[in-house]
Amino acid sequence: MYKANWQRLYQSKLTTASESLAHYLKNGSRIFIGSGCSTPQHLVQALASRLGEYVDVEIIYSIALGPSPFIQENLLHACRVKTFFVTDTLREAVFEGRADYIPVYLSQAPNLFTSGVLDLDLTIIQVSPPDEHGFCSLGVSVDVVKAAVECGRHVVAQINPRMPRVLGDSFIHVTDLDAIVERDEPLIETAIPERRAIAERMAIYVAKLVEDGSTIQVGIGRILTAVLSHLTDKRDLGVHSEMITDAYLPLVEKGVITGKKKSIHQDKIIASFCLGTRKLFDFVHNNPQVELYPSDYVNHPEIISKNRAMTAINSALQVDLSGQVCADSLGHKVYSGFGGYVDFSVGASRSPGGKSIIVLPSTSSDGKKSRIVSHLSLGAGVVGTRASAQYVVTEFGIANLHGKTLRERALSLINIAHPRFREPLLEQAKQIRYVYDDQIISSPLGQFYPEEWERYQAFDSDTEVLFRPIKPTDERALQEFFYSLPDEDIYYRFLSSMKVFPHRDTQAMANIDYENEMTIIGVVGDIGSEKIISVGRYILDQESNFAEVDFAVRSELQHKGIGTFLVCYLTEIARSKGVTGFMAYVLAANRKMLRVFRKTGYVIHRSLEDGVYEIKFRFDEPADDSEMPEVR
Image 1 (cartoon, helix red, strand yellow):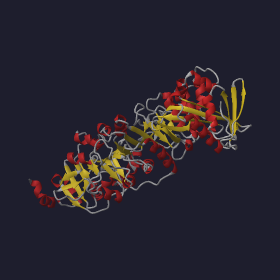
Image 2 (cartoon, one colour):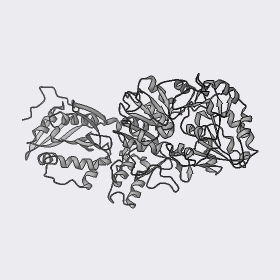
Image 3 (cartoon, rainbow, N blue to C red):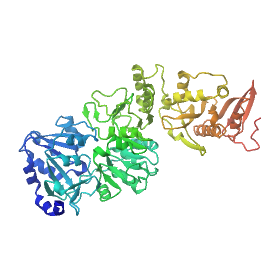
Image 4 (cartoon, one colour):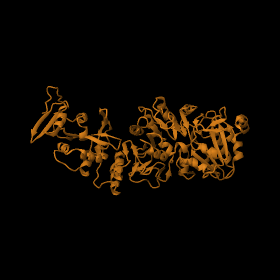
C-alpha cells in the first residue's frame, strides 16, 4: 500500500552525491559500481573525491567503461579494484598488479552476490526516472546489476533522464533505494570498431555457418562486429545474447532479425546488457521487441539450449592443435575474461542444430606469431576445453573439430593457420605424435585455398551439391568415397582393380597446388563434416599444356548430370588458367564416361588401342551438333 505514495518517499530520499556517499562509506567497505554503459559517472567521481579519507575499500566492477579514478596512484592506499572482465579501462592496471581479475562465468557472477561470497555494503547504480508506478528501469545494464541491487545493504541510485527505460526483468522500485541523486549527463558510449580486411574475410566464413532461422549470440570486438554486417542475406534470425550492440540495428531495420523462429521468447531480442551509442539506447527505450534479463538467466546454458539452432560466435586469442581455446589472457597477462564464452558454447552445443564458433586471426597483430599453436603459451588460460571445441575460423577458412581425432584436428587447424606457419606447425605436430611422420601439406603454390571455385548446384529437388576444391582435410572423406564405389566403377576410374586406398596415396590426392593440379569434389552435409559424392580432377602436362582429366560419381547418384557438370566445371577452371585442352584415357566399355565427354561441347578427337580410348579436345575447338561424334 505504501507504494501508492512513492512520490513523497522519492522526495525524502533526494540528496547530493557527496552527502549520500558520506552517509554509507566506511573503512573496509565493499562497493559495487553499475557496469558498462550504465556506469553512474557522477557518483563515481563523487566517490573518488571522498575515498582518500578511508582505507581498505573494495571496488567491484563487472564491466568497467570510461575513466576509472580508483586505479590512480593517489587512491591506491584507499581502495582496491576487482573486476569480472578486463576492459581497456583496467587492462594496464591488472597487468601491473594495481587491480585484480576475478575469473567467473557470467552466468554465475550474480551468485557471488546472492550467496554472500562477495558481501556488498554499498551498490551504486544509474537508472531511468521512475514511471507512474514508481518503478525505475536499470536501463542498458541488468546483467549482474540486478543481483547487486537486491543484495547490497545500501543502494544509491543516480536518476538520469537519458537512461532508456528498457523492458524485461529490469525494474527496481524507489522504495528499494536508500538514496537518490538526480543527474542529467550523457551515458558512456562505445562506437562500432572500424572494419578491417582480415575481419571481413573471417566474417564471410562465419556467415556460411549461420543458417536461416538461427538464434545468434555474438561476442564483442572488431571481428565479431564484422560478422553481423555479413548476415544481411539471412532470414528470420533471432537474438539471445549476453549483450547487444549497434551492429545489430541494421539487421533489425532490414528485417533479418525477426525472432519468428525462436523456440523461447519468440519475436523478442533477449540480452542482459547493451554496449553502444545513443542510437542503440534510443532503439531499446520502451521497445517491446527488446527485453533485458539478469545474466544468471540469459547466460544459463540450459536456457540457451532451449533455442533451436542456437549459434554462439565468440573470439579467441589462441587455439592449440588439440582444440583447447584461450580467450582471456596473453600468457599470464589477463586480457579480457570468461564473459559468456563458456555459457554460450555449452548452451549452443546442447541446442538442437546448435553451433559454437570461435573466430580468431591467424597471427598476432604484428604478424610475428601464429595464433594457431602446438601448445598454449605459458600461463594461458584454457577457457574452452578440447572436448567442447566445434568450429574454429580464421581468415584462411573453417575447421570443424567436433567428433574429430587429435590428428584430424591438427590437420584442420594447420590448414587454416597462416601459410607462413604451416610447415613449422606440421613439424611440431609430428614431434608430439599428433600426425603421421610422413604427413605432407600443400606446396607453396597451394597455400591460399581458391574459395572462388566454390559453387552450389541443384540437380533435383532432393540433390543440392557443393562443388569445391579439395582440401588436405578431405583425406579420410576421399578414402570413404573410393571405398563406396563398386568394383566396376573403380576399374573404370583407375583402369585397374584397386582394392585399397592407403594414406600415402589419398593424402597426395588431397594435397594439391590448385595450379598444375586441380581436384573438385562434390560434397553434401555440414561444413567440415561433409560426405564426398563425386570427384573430378585434372593434372597439367606443362610441355603440351594439356591436362589429363578423370572423374567419378557415387553409383546411387549417377544419371543426374553430376558427372557432366563436374567435367564442364573443371573445363571452366582450366580455361581460366590458360590450359589448352583436356585428354583422358577411357575404357571402351565405359560408355557413361564417353557420353559425358561428348556433352562438353568441344570437338572430340579419339583413338582406340587395346580397348582403351584416348580422348582429347581443345578449348578453342567448339563443336556444333553436326561435328559432335556419336559415341557407340
